[in-house]
Image 1 (tube, one colour):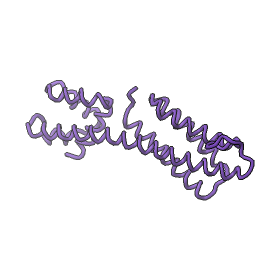
Image 2: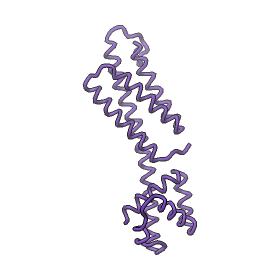
Image 3: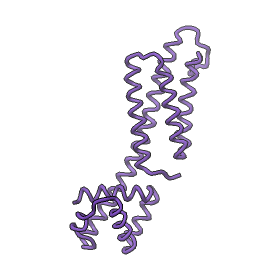
Length: 192
């Protein structure tokens, strides 16, 4: 299922920000941090379910079970009942879950950033080419003030040029049309 890439990026960044706060709490030996970690994992799992990313949803679910096992007094590594040093097992499990979830979200953010970077690269080259061929002028770009005007320009360009329509089709294979318009807005703002 395709989801607005800008939305994915925003949600991943929010989750990473919360993870950083939890890591700070971990370093301060905050008591009860494991419940906050589980709450965050519920949010992250719901997000991955919403966007249809079952692989990452499953990984987060596994981390939840890992931490929950430690909380219930079961060593998640050996599955033995913990009789002594239960707090240490919970703390170690919390650290493991924080580390693994950070890696997962950072990789997801890299993937999203790469999609946006590719889109930006294609669109910036395209706009420079269109300017060079004088299909549009810098003055036309300067007059664009809002996203609806960007959308109208994109519609005009894709309907008037087969090459641009092909690029549009290629971009839509990776991102939604709304993402294309948002990135095009960034390109136009930089070129103005």
